[in-house]
Length: 399
Image (cartoon, rainbow, N blue to C red; front, side):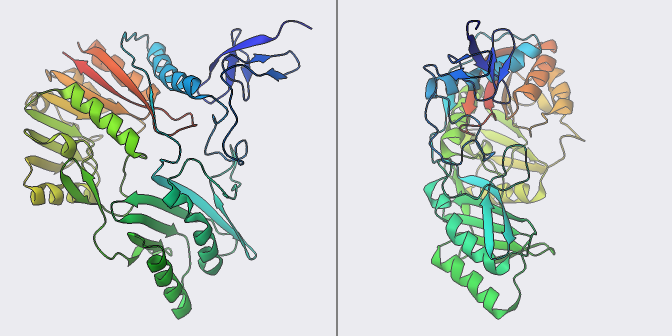
């Protein structure tokens, strides 16, 4: 038998890769793999903390020890840039969110007979892995899974998937159930009792005719800096507090003491409200409810934050608008911001803080900015989706 091949890195989808390009499911850098596929464990392998690992599609990398996991997150960013022939001398060590820190999750539930399965889908499958534990989720979210399963025996339709959305807000857990049928007094009372017993911040259901808020003792909020935002139902928030802090710190470092800042794809104000003290911020967002929430929060706090509801994919800011600012914050969806980045590349904005949840689209946009005269000063990789292949980052460009 020939000598076992050394696994040198983890590919974008989580497989180990040998020096000659062989992909090995479950392989970890430092492992060796024999010709017959048997893996000889190396120093970077660890025991997965979840009994569902290998079936549940929520995690791909629980078998990877912490240092190698951080290296994977950083290497994903470097690899994305290399794909566009970009070399950045300052790709910083990755910052990983800890276990039991995910404050936002979307699960699927399915009722079959009297049984309800609830959890993430199995890897590359529509099958639901019935969640009995989860080392990813905040304990407050994980503890609700069993009670939600019981509740759904009453209001889930047979073999009709239910979307279960969970998010931790300042007042407690927000729960949204989509695809249920809550008919009659008994069901209505059960839902009210459930919300009260579990001290939910907001409880809403969608029976097919739009969202109905059943329980909301007070307006649910999130605090950014010293400003509190009344957030719309399941408003987009960063998935962990640690990841949010890492990204805000990186953006704050990137923009420095710029006196006027534009925050593009601003959401409910994660960055705009966190950096607004002592400066003017112009926040642009395409979702109307998020724009309204951010506007109301800024007005209540008398912050110097001007807002605009604007689709930046169809109507990006042009150089004449961008040149008014000392720094631009850019946090687009996974597809990136191709049209807006073309306008940025033609602008004279001195600094761009680009936050991304997709190293590939980031690298594409980075090439456009560099071709337009910008320098990529540094990149901070962030691993908010612990044990998954999903990687985020913050970066600084200057001209």
